[in-house]
Length: 67
Image 1 (cartoon, rainbow, N blue to C red):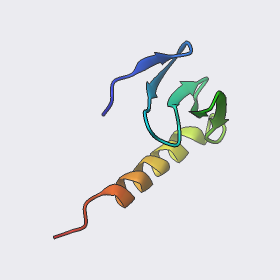
Image 2 (image 1 turned 30 degrees about the vertical axis):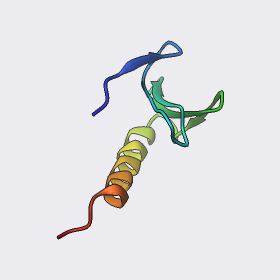
Image 3 (image 1 turned 90 degrees about the vertical axis):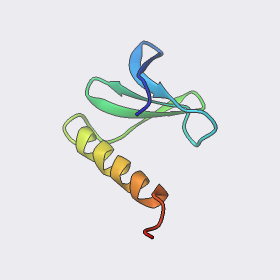
Image 4 (image 1 turned 135 degrees about the horizontal axis):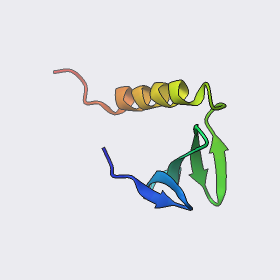
């Protein structure tokens, strides 16, 4: 798991070479940052579940195929 960093005053993770520049948590909402814009991942009550679902989906599609 990458370490948390300060991203524009919010705890987050900076990403390099990808579709997003950073991911932060702002007032309970996971925010995806790209090109100076922040895209909310749902509203505060839904955001943690949506973030977990996105994380699981990314892990599933990037996992090595079973032997």
